[in-house]
Length: 311
Image 1: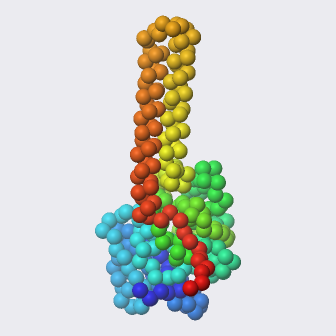
Image 2: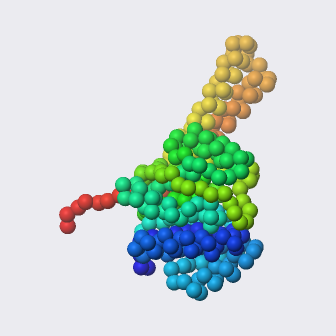
Image 3: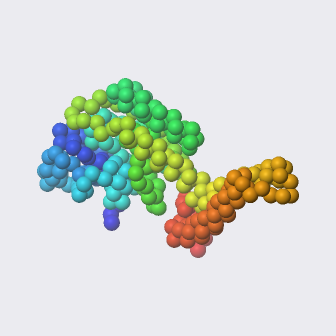
């Protein structure tokens, strides 16, 4: 596979009016960079004429690739497929709704040259409905608390990545918002630049309150994965210890109240119940540890930046 300098990955879902415009804008910007490039559009199960328009663009232009999905799988899946099919040493992501400005791409590329592996756009002056901005701020606030991530705007689709970032990265659900967080956990250096943002002119926004709930669930999954994927027994042993301590507490209370003659009642039964639950979590932790070792022996959970050796 011949490697290119830049791959632009853009998910499409019912954006028939925006596609020709975003393509022309991307082409104009990329041509001025004097670098080899490709533009990958992923049609995520559009129900309008988006794919027909993409086909026309494909027939007229060389530096374009179209991937059509059978149904709407969501932005995360569309991006994941785009990453797997990209040939560029740098991968740029941008939505096809014209709310991000392709003219900001050189700013991201210049930031990468400063030694960063990922550069995220920051919609400093966002042009969206108040409700959408409010939900986004809540999402970013929760993410910053849980992951300790310093990025201001994880939901901005305009990002640039070095290709090696995706060597062994798999994501799902609404995890595209946490790609920089997952990459930081793997040791990659994350940067951020302010970018322009425009109000949507054509089509309808796909963002709603349901996505913030799904995003929160994926945030918890991402946090658990980062903290316990290599040693899941720590999580299960903590829960087991908590249950066993409760069991001992009930047992001591029963002893203090009834002496050596144990009263077989709710307190003693609760003590036995929590003890059994604790033992079960200890067993789960042992089994999870075995599965984790098997997984990481087949899938490297680390990234080597470079190797210096004499031959």
